[in-house]
Amino acid sequence: MTRRPRTTPILAHLVALVFASPGASKPPLVVGNAAPDFQVITLGGTKLTLADFKDQVLVLNFWATWCAPCKRELPLLDQYYRAQQHVGLRVLAVTTEDSAPLSQLKPLAAALAIPMVRRFKGDYGPLKGVPTNYVIDRDGILRYAQAGSFTLDDLNTILVPLLREHAPVAPDPEPHQDQGRSDKAQTGQQRVP
Image 1: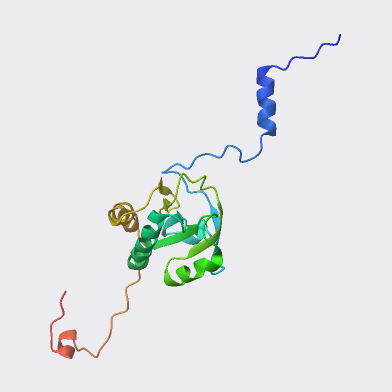
Image 2 (image 1 turned 120 degrees about the horizontal axis):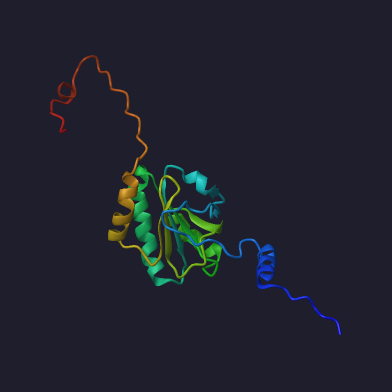
């Protein structure tokens, strides 16, 4: 009768660690930590990564066409983006895999100012529901990660402080030289400060 050597529990654990598949235990997303990198291809074919949004405040919005809260949230995000893009807000609308085919999304994409993403690769899952929103600040730090749709109050509460944080300063336009005449003299009216 041959005797099999016993494997100690410590040795078995080490063997399991060595042969574990990479990425099998991804660290969870933690608000306050650096946001994971991602690669996207928009419906228009543009390739983007997290680095393309340096010094911007980015909202990653994961949504689906069959989701009623998503249908209310997407137009709100689009309007908010149109109003705040001049101060560095960016939004990517990431359609989930079980959403409508790309051909059906094209009319919606044409009506929106925010880019729709057709392919997303990155460690932002698994999603606990749709819509799910991630907000990344100008320094690439994850500042918000939650399933559930935004309201206007939510957007103001979460995004306005981030948009005010060390926003890029636009250069002052050169003063207009008009041969010594003031604005008041040119129009006959006083300018409102």
